[in-house]
Image (cartoon, rainbow, N blue to C red):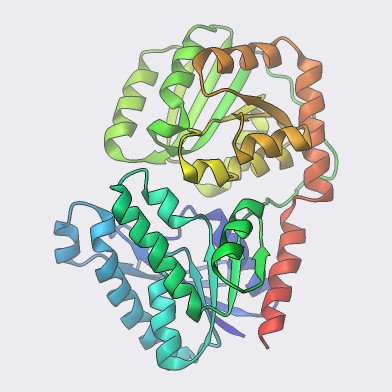
Length: 373
């Protein structure tokens, strides 16, 4: 089967899309990804592990617009034109749209060509953008998604809360493909560092409690913290400058996708706090949880939201209030109790081995595509 995926990033740091595309290629499908390279930084065409990647650059006019959300309409037009051109060469069978910021391309192609349309909702997009834009605009995208879903043949999403959300607005079967990771070990391997180490890898933004994490670690000189990832330039600069002033915090910045798990294995504890006031954060289950689990590392998440509840259910970490003192107490608790660290790490690894690994998700994804035939 020939599959066209649409993606509103440059496909350099998107593990979910990579895992799905690679699994489909491995199972005999041909996958082409039309990706939006917003900053025109990568090659127009690239072959990555059998996945054909065609990148679309922002036009000069798009680059004049201050925010990516203002560029969406123009990206949809450019993406549609490129996808239609590729279809005339490849004769695709399925359009697989990742998130709402590509779904209009898929709907327009389906209307034009009549192909099967899969919507892969990594998050509730209207909830996500509500953190950055006025509520009426965020509500518009919630309405737009509901309207476009009428044209979708199958929906894939990432967890139970999102499945429940979509079940309320569309009468279609909702398939869950979680952001699980591949296991490269079959046995748990303990790690003892000379200095107790914390790790955060991910989006660098205020709502991830990173500035507070740095302040907490500064008060614990026998703890080392590494922060890596990417984010908006202004916040990243603030974060970087604060890290430079503190001896036991290392700021690394953007790292290749293939270095995430090796770095995770070298840490004692993974930190992943999300602001619980955000609707998007309340229902999300970040990649970091699954990365920690396959590496046998305990993780600290926010209490009361889905990620915290999941971690407590699987007994693979601690859930703390979104306050500095609560985080500090959790770090000290794990630092001073190596047996607890190991127990939580083992629980996570066992759960990853038995339930939460990419091999199991791959089987579900392949079955979804078989049902389209």
